[in-house]
Image (cartoon, rainbow, N blue to C red; front, top):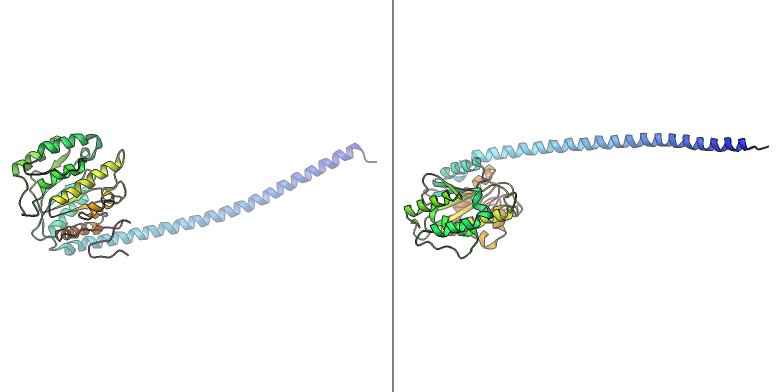
Length: 313
């Protein structure tokens, strides 16, 4: 006779068998899963190691190429700016090492740096724009006309350009030495520039900047520097705007210029001045400016050529 106890024992045996099966099955599955994960982890680690090796090899090749360009620089620019004069304008974020290297190459090219002018953080600060406009209008030398545009970068370029560059029509200063000294002193007192002891007007200008602008109103800051450089270019025989990595982006001065057809048709830009090649190209682009030509040079996506006379692959 089948009793209640038999049923209870049978049901318990069934559940026990199920439990044992689940435990055994999950153990086997876990071991299989862990084994697969371990294999995948080892494969990923191998890929990471390969990528790290590739990166190190690429960095070594770039360092070697940069070293070669450094040694080649004096030869590449020799005579390109013979008996020319250049004024150097730097922004607050420009790398001093880039500035010093550019000065050396300009001398190797046969030119003389007639002065240096550093634009401060306040120069491109939108909150100081009205103050900058007021100073520009008040310090304008007699005979110098401001551009019709009202943005602070263009207006400041309309003042600074004639102060630091000689006229491309007659190769004469566009303001008296007293007017130049007074205007630069006023900009310095206003906290917008820092000038070397003496700034004599030159034929050509290099505006040296850093990478992409950061922080509040980054786009406005970049636009101020870009428009300033373009207006300085209009005041003399030629200007090159050179920036470091990131400068060709939308929040970089070089990028702002390249997005403006009117500006890029006259102003040459270089986006890799942090490299030896970019510094050499800056000098070569300045020579090209003397011939009335301009270009977009470097290795960013919106550059047209790596250097004057070279083709983009």
